Length: 273
Ligand SMILES: Nc1ncnc2c1ncn2[C@@H]1O[C@H](COP(=O)(O)OP(=O)(O)OP(=O)(O)O)[C@@H](O)[C@H]1O
Ligand SMILES: [Mg+2]
Image 1 (cartoon, protein in one colour):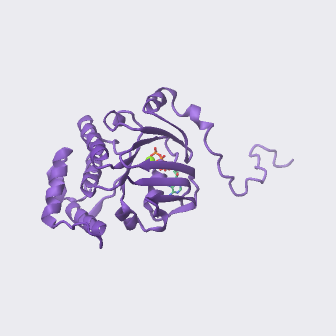
Image 2 (image 1 turned 135 degrees about the horizontal axis):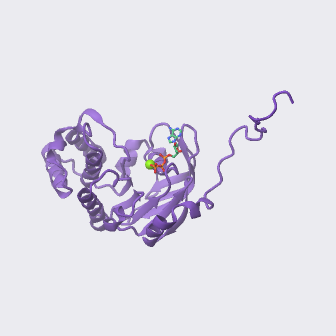
Image 3 (image 1 turned 180 degrees about the horizontal axis):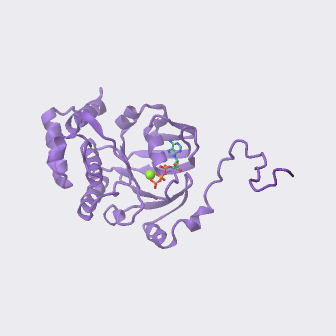
């Protein structure tokens, strides 16, 4: 049983404190859905967890089975078992998916007793995964994500998840851009990983339809950088009718901007008064 523990997490990009005290525990095999308005900081959370350059942590801790993830570079966080499916997967010209996966699996094994698969074995794993989620094998030899459609990129993220078998996956809108068949295949695949391999999932989404197949144990409402409510799958349904408005008042206070003590200049004031 593994545990990803996020406690009092604060931080964001370029010195902006977007996350304002986030607490969350995800255990092996659990599926958590994180839902919140645009701009509330969901992707910021995913970047802070994975250690994206330019993102600063101003408070709190993140541990994976007791290991301080925040002290590690991104590749070591991945090695420790954390995976991020990006909202906007990056195109990497010149690097094939096969090369990227082979390097990742080799890095993951790094010095441990885990077996390092051969290139042929990695290719076979990719083909098997591609078939499971209906991803066209023609794309496997393309440079990573280059020229793929939005939905194809999301399937590509899922394929990598299937090959890498991490302990925890943060999936940032893995459903966006997927057609109905792809949505089913992708959510089913992630659910299988949770049920059979004990993958812990933090699925960021705007839509209930992802959660038809990828059935969450817990749904969290995320507003202005913190979780303000948690509940069962019925909470996701409720949000469809209420929206986030009832939760806005539960959000943490905005940090006081520098200089906010000064009186504002009135643009309509008489300049000769
Ligand atoms: N590099 C940056 N510099 C300044 N502000 C940023 C930067 N990156 C993100 N932000 C701001 O941080 C806030 C949170 O953005 P984030 O992408 O985390 O939102 P989100 O909850 O994922 O939204 P969505 O549902 O639209 O994907 C937004 O107001 C965004 O404009
Ligand atoms: Mg986002």
